[in-house]
Length: 158
Image 1 (spheres, rainbow, N blue to C red):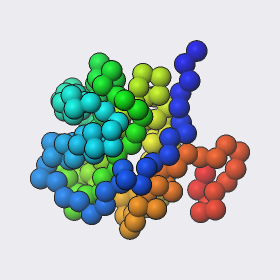
Image 2 (cartoon, rainbow, N blue to C red; image 1 turned 180 degrees about the vertical axis):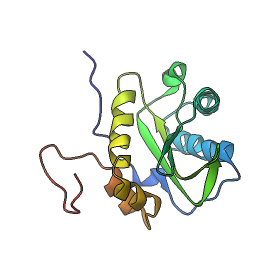
Image 3 (spheres, one colour; image 1 turned 135 degrees about the vertical axis):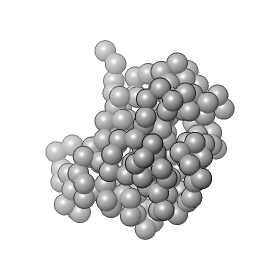
């Protein structure tokens, strides 16, 4: 039985605020380079992120995209990691403006769990708005932190 990891905490070094990107490809490059800088992936993973985007858009709504590699590229993942980049002016993502790109590196058993944990944050439009408008790294980390099972949060969000 595989374990779906949903307890991933965001590393403060993995958050970049107030950035700009020329286009979607540049935004994906920035996510991939950050994942490499953090030591989470092998260099070939960046190419796989673009391959994934060409086959299926990673735009998920609420001004957020979650670029990640292809299934085959999971072999290039050294450890599970998120790379969060904020583009306040937005990046055209096939006609939709993306303000937050969350690059994901995850292995076979953790991939679905990590995507589910990120999706939890985005299902509440108020939380998604707070993420898009985050003024500092601490806010991003708080919004993306794993939910405590059975406990409410101080900010009133589950």
